[in-house]
Structure formats: structure tokens, C-alpha cells
Amino acid sequence: LALISMVDKLSNSVGQCERIVQTPVPLNYARHTIRFLTTWCLTLPFAVCGEFGLATGPVMSVVAWTLFGIYEIGVQIEDPFQRTLKLSVVCAQIEDEVVGEQWRRRQSAFKEELVEEVEEMEGG
Image (cartoon, rainbow, N blue to C red; front, top):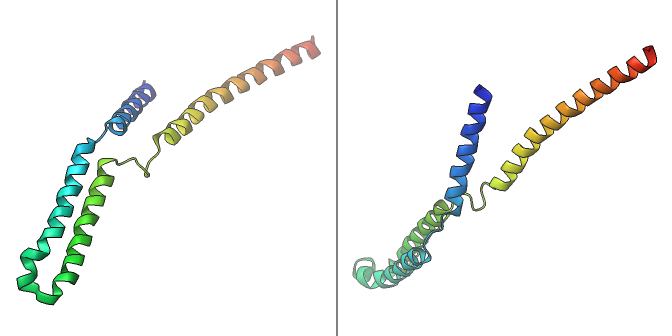
């Protein structure tokens, strides 16, 4: 009973992960975010050039690099299984282990029956 409960929980977890993977991020959301970020980074130097003077270029490079990096991290977080965890591989491995174990049990039982029949034939 405990094993069945654990398998049921595993099945539910895999189902939840599949739903996460299958849920698409709206394309307009991603497009709007990157357009806004690009526009903001292009117009920000005009607002800060009075304060930074000639250092505006390097400062804006660091700011843009940081913000676009955060954007890319956000894109990867939105799709957590993109290149990190391949559920099909995990599911195939679990299936191989479960089916393989059942197959080994059946083969073992079959061999035992076959040995018993051979012994009966030789002894009888």
C-alpha cells in the first residue's frame, strides 16, 4: 500500500511538471517587455548625460548589460525545463526501471517453473 501511494504521488508530480512545461508564456508579454527595456535603455542616456558627462557611455553599458541579463534570466525562469530537465528522459528511465523489474521477476519465475518441470521429468 505504501508503494502504491508513493507511485501515485510520483505520477501526480510528473503530471504537474508536464502541465508547467505545456503552459505557454504569452508571446506578446515577452515582446512587450523586451521592447520597453530597449526603449528605456536607449533613452536613459539623454536623461543622465548631464550628471555623468563622458562616463555616460560606460555607465549605460553596464546598466544595459545588467538589465538585459536580468531579462534573459527571467525568460529562462519562465520555462524552467527548457534545457535543464528533460522529463521524457526521466519518464523513460522510470518506465525502464519499473517494466524492467517486472520483466526480471517474470523471467525469474518462469526459470524456476522451467527448472521444476525439468527436474520432475528427469526424476520421474
